[in-house]
Length: 377
Image (tube, rainbow, N blue to C red; front, side, top):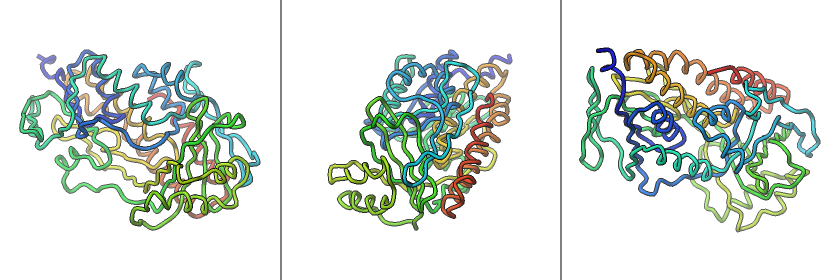
């Protein structure tokens, strides 16, 4: 009788990093999984992302670490420099248990999407594109789902992994808080990687925080955090000149990047938003993971990692617990405080950056957080 309460048919809403990781993890546990994504082309936007040792450990858990290491960048430590590019000290990246898991890295979003989407399909997930959910009705035995194309189906569990503006979250908790602008926006640009850049780098002590992350043998991306009021979209043609002005006064490799900005530079500008959804993240047999529940800012480079960890833990709990209710309880017990630390500490680091706190005060919270995140999930 108990086995009848276990989840066998799963719907994952959202085909981003968290959703694909959930589909992969659940298929590997023997569950049948459907995945839907609103974008009919299943595209991915943005530049590169920084990844920590715990995130790489999570990639190992979903079975993609080796491919990431072959095609992206992995290494150890974060080099902290002053505004002139002079090395100050290295923030250590703690070991996360296994010798085969590096301490940090970087990858282009399209490459990560390609790796995960291919693995998702290879494992037999049924992927449907161009649709989302219109309604969810949960009872003791399952969830009746009506899709935006008018079709309907019943599942044992529905996983909302549909991002910061989650449709599933609005259906479950229409009065829940949403993401808030933090007062910072992030500029990103992908550029050639010189031989001198051998690990992730932070440039602190100036008006703005700037960083570099290698993403392959030949490329890296630069990010620049700008305190600014929320504003209208800036035309693409104006982005190079505005970024050039923001980078004035920075030396070393950053000066080289600034001098090579041009009309052909592909610059991505985004506002930073984040929040932590108060408990519960579940209602009936529907549960939220990743950015649908805890979107964070990039100060700890852990947003993607938290989504992948959510996926791994949820799959484990659904497979080992005798009921969906106990699986959800186990998931929340393992995930809430860890995700809260990432969101709250990332936001605090952002506040320190905007207040131009000494570089030691900025770096110390990064180090403290990375030590905690290195602990087992």
